[in-house]
Image 1 (cartoon, rainbow, N blue to C red):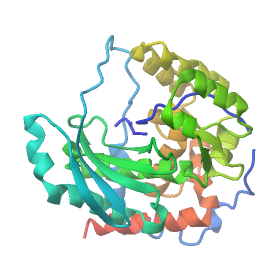
Image 2 (spheres, rainbow, N blue to C red; image 1 turned 120 degrees about the vertical axis):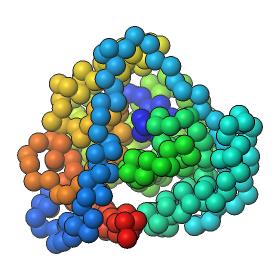
Image 3 (cartoon, rainbow, N blue to C red; image 1 turned 180 degrees about the vertical axis):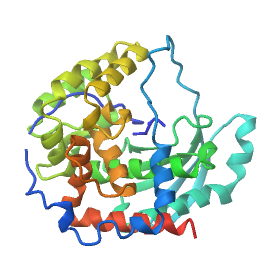
Image 4 (cartoon, rainbow, N blue to C red; image 1 turned 135 degrees about the vertical axis):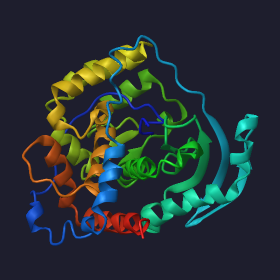
Length: 327
């Protein structure tokens, strides 16, 4: 999964269901914005880095995916990366491949942002590049064991600190909402991500089908989908199906049109990609934004995360680590 500037695995389709406890009210959360106050200007810059219409291709007639190269892959254990595996790369990427200190510095940023107990599913760290300001970072499940995940970061985008921080938290939100405690990882889909198989799996799923497996009844994604997507899923599905017709511009324009019709329900246009991208994008805004007090669905999505004390605590950890970068 990647944020465009992102899903390494292209998610598809379908859905169902309702759960979740009583809304606790942001005003009842003591000190909800105490950490935000530590570096509000920097946090606003991070949010602004995510601004822009990713899917506005109305004036475009053609789209070509940039060429991507995997530069080096590390094994991960706890805070450590080791056993680098070098890939064949063009000559212009050899300096980046040899710059071990730079590669480790990116990993250090990630480990400072995310507590060790919240990233145990990450077993590989991969450095790649598709050029500047395309895909900044991504996560993807392992083909051998879809309960394990890879983190990928584009070394060409490290100078864009604010956008990289936003994207790292967006990508972490996929790990948070799609790990094996939240969904039942489907090994068949990991081995053969086929549209017919996806459709079959979705039809057999009694809870929300994430594209990687059925959600657990009490999962974050199930609660989020039930509250925010049941009324719009069929309409969105008409746009989503266009991705399989081979015309990417038509697909992007359909997503953008859907976004414009429901703009007050989403934090930005990338969030309409898929419900799993919506929760990930909303989580990143939840982390880096002050607490919203409006009545729009967009604001309700950010307040959704305040219903979970563990997510409030995680937000405080991330904000403390983020603000420490300005000291």
